[in-house]
Structures are given as C-alpha cells and as structure tokens.
Image: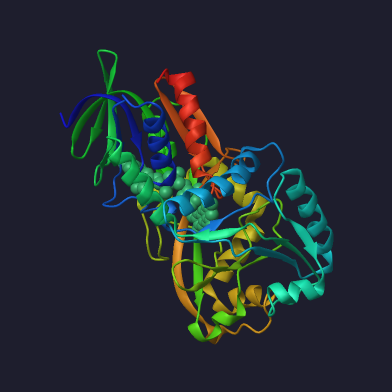
Length: 403
Ligand SMILES: Cc1cc2nc3c(=O)[nH]c(=O)nc-3n(C[C@H](O)[C@H](O)[C@H](O)COP(=O)(O)OP(=O)(O)OC[C@H]3O[C@@H](n4cnc5c(N)ncnc54)[C@H](O)[C@@H]3O)c2cc1C
C-alpha cells in the first residue's frame, strides 16, 4: 500500500485541484490530504495551456456560477498574485464591434457586465478606443480596465508550495486507474500502488467524466476535447497590441472568436481557435488516441452537437488548416496584421462537457456522489476563479462529505 488512513484524496494537480487542496488544508489544519497528479509536474494540462487572462466577468449570465465566481475571482486572483510576488499586469481589455450587426451586442454586454458588477466597465468613444489600442479599427468598443494577465503555471506552483508547506503531499507521476471498496474505505488504485482513503474530490479536467464514472457517479455528460491553437506575433510587430483585444462573442458559442493577448511569457498571442481534438491531451494535429476518438464518435451527444453546429465545425477546421483564414479573422480586429507577422505558437485543449442532446455545458458543474465530489465542467474563467472555486468546493466538502 502506497498510503493508508488518508482523510481526503484530490485527483488532479491542476489549478482547481490545488486551489481546493490548499483551501481545505488552510481551514482544517488536522486533515490528512493527498493530491494525485499523473503528469510529472503540476499545471501540465489546461492550467498550463491557456490564454493567461484574469477575466473580469462581463460575458456571463447574471446569477450563473461563472458570473459569481469570476467577478470575485478576478479580485482575489490579483490580490493573491500581488501578495505572493507573482508577476501580474492589469492591462485592460477592449471588446470591439467591427460589424453593424455587432453594435447592439456591445450594449448588451455592457448591461450584462454592469449587472455582474464588473468594475470600471464602459463603452468608449472612437478617440478613447484609439488611445487604448491605436491599431484597432472598430465601430464601437467596450473597455474593461480591470482585466489582467498572469502565468497560471506560476500561480498553480505557488498553490502547491503552500499546500506542501501546510503538510499536504502532492504525488506526481501517479495516475488513478481504478477504485475498490474495502471495510467502508476507498482503495484508490494507481500506477504507483494503492491509497486508502475515506473521501475523494475529482478535479481531473480532461478525464473528469471517466473518474466520475469510476467512482459510481451517474452522469450522462461526456468530455469532448477541443484544441485551441495560437499564433504569436513577431517581436517587431508586438507594438500593434497594448493589452487584450477581443471580438464580440457569439452568445451561443462564447469560447469561439480569436483574440490578441499580451502574455506574461514575454510575447503576444493571437488565438485560440477551437477544433475537435482526436486525443484528450492532443496538443498537436497529429496526436491521435483510438480510445478517445472512439469514445467521442460513439457518443450520441457528439452527433447531436455536429447536427446543431456542423457549419461552425467545418469553418473552425478550415481556419485551423489555413493560416490565411486565421489571419482574416485577426485582421477584423487589427487590419495591419499580415500573415508574415505571425509565427505558429502553442495550443491548449479544452475539457468541454457535452450533454446527450449535443448542448455544450456552459457553466461550471460540480456535483457529489457517495464519498466524492466531482468537478464535471470547469471552462474558462476557471483559472481566474480558482481561489473562489476552491472555497466553494471546500464548503461543499464540509456539507456533503462531512470533512
Ligand atoms: C485554450 C484555453 C484557454 C483558456 N484561457 C483561460 C483564460 O485566459 N483565463 C481563465 O481563467 N481560464 C482559461 N481557460 C480555462 C482554464 O484553463 C481551466 O478552467 C482550468 O485550467 C481548469 O483547471 P483544472 O484543474 O480543472 O484542469 P486541468 O488543469 O486540466 O487539471 C486536471 C489535472 O488532472 C490530472 N489528471 C487527469 N486524470 C488523472 C488521473 N487519472 N490520475 C491523476 N491525475 C489525473 C491531469 O494530468 C491534470 O493535471 C482556458 C482553457 C483553455 C483550454
């Protein structure tokens, strides 16, 4: 047995698993918690492959978890970084309407953001827009001065350091592969040996649906992986972007729409798009997993999604395969950008929970089963909101798991 008498096992060393672990140990000092992470480092999946934006909470339906978590999340994340000397830059975000048909959407976004109590949000004049982002060309723009950027790998590493400092253990290279029950305890099977525990929190991101099923959770949701690909702006063209420049989102598919982002990694990114990945951790086009692809293609939710949105799917594949189409989308924001200004950048894979009717689960979904809590959907702004989500799960663990 690798470990015995553990009070709580958290599966997944991403930003949400470690924020949760840290919060529970901070508030319940005498509890024995272990985090299991299958990769050799923390934040190796979504938490280390994202846009690095500290969102301010404009888009989300008032009252949704996204709206509640993000507005407080922005504040707590910014304060946490300042307190722990993690470089953070509140560079502001401009959302721009480039077509007549998007003009009303700017007003709707302003109303939504105001209802969500986003600080400092306002529709700006053409002169102000040019002052904020001189190279943008748009009919109307909304400015969110509180939006910022950070490196979420650094944030996750600090969560892990604090967790270890308070007595918690993070087991890297340790993959959960099964579970058994014995004398009222859970025996978690891993590639490194068994771990005996009373309770589990599943923060397994791209594999959260599989882990949920393993622990007896009845859910008909499935994770469908969508790869987001980025380009980077050549150094000589970075002057084109001062902060964050986003198009008006499609309310039905809000994660679509390529944008320009300053990053704390020392370059400017453009993207991401959203294409079906043929592997849950498929960061390259050529990455294929037979198991993952079969699971996607035999899920009726996938075919219903395709039926509802096949045109968008084909359009995104076209944009992924042809740089000129990607550049065309970017030129809607900054007309001066040319194909030769962009180098191929990194990518991330979104763990998108899809319902059997093909609908994309938009909000966070966190549910309990016997002796366990499962994070079944943690889309953007999951990283921004991680401290708040950690608190939410910690309270749920007290209520539902008796921790
Ligand atoms: C392209 C992209 C851009 C994004 N941009 C932003 C942004 O700008 N701002 C923002 O706030 N949010 C953004 N997000 C969302 C944000 O990154 C996620 O909400 C957040 O990272 C989710 O964290 P997590 O801990 O749930 O998942 P993950 O980071 O994926 O962590 C899950 C962990 O579980 C581990 N695991 C899985 N299965 C097992 C197993 N069987 N045993 C042990 N370990 C296992 C994995 O290795 C992984 O490390 C973006 C996401 C993507 C993909």
